[in-house]
Length: 169
Image (cartoon, rainbow, N blue to C red):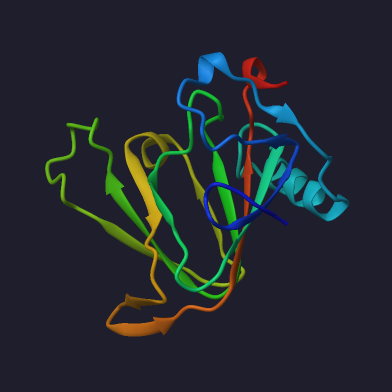
């Protein structure tokens, strides 16, 4: 595990993502260690069964302890291909989707969609969900979903993405 600027522990496979990237045309992701066999098998399944259009070549494992989250964002583009997949392990958690400020086509800019990510669930998103909406996990120790209070425990997320050729180091 590596603790970085983002405050949580991560492991990067394939390509290391630099969280300080602001101008992707000036930076290239650095190639890092190859993913373990079982993660490569999951990548192959995601590709073979058409969950993703291109074979994932970057995997990030994030460890979230209660009280940690991730701010509202869209996975950096044009660095990453359209399809993003996250496998949730450990504690359930609520992810919130909101229209991105640049998306003027959504009538209600204050609209939000809450999605419960259960242990073992696979979230696959792309297209409008990827480009027109942000996603985040609030920094808190409990979530409320469908009127029920959920106490957070440790959660591991495994995110599969494809780094576009022009950003590969």
